[in-house]
Amino acid sequence: MAHAAALQRLAQYSFVEQRELYQRLAGGAYPWLTACARAILGAGQRGLAAGGCAARNLLDAPPSTREVQFDVDIHFPKEHRYRPLGEVSPVIRTLATEQFDDYVKRVRIFAHRGS
Image (cartoon, rainbow, N blue to C red; front, top):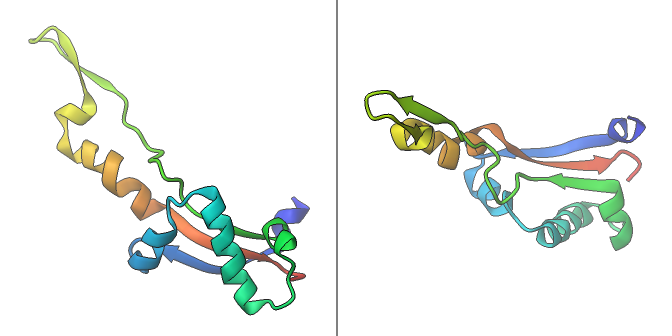
């Protein structure tokens, strides 16, 4: 992967360490994130063409939808039925919908070394 080797991470933001900035960038729509990447990287790189910025630099942010799902049914023999794990366990429901992505994922900004 020659392209990956040419990228240098400029910044990384997490829910735990930089919550406000992370929440502003995580889950943003692609066109908005592209504009943010141009603004962030363009601020320090005068003369960078708008079209070249998106091709040579990267703002990597979690998607707007949660990616982790605990879509498992648990069998209850006494009730003769299955129930969703999220219904049975509030801890799992919370992890799946609120915490897991926030605590694992990062917003990262990469720039091409030649920029």
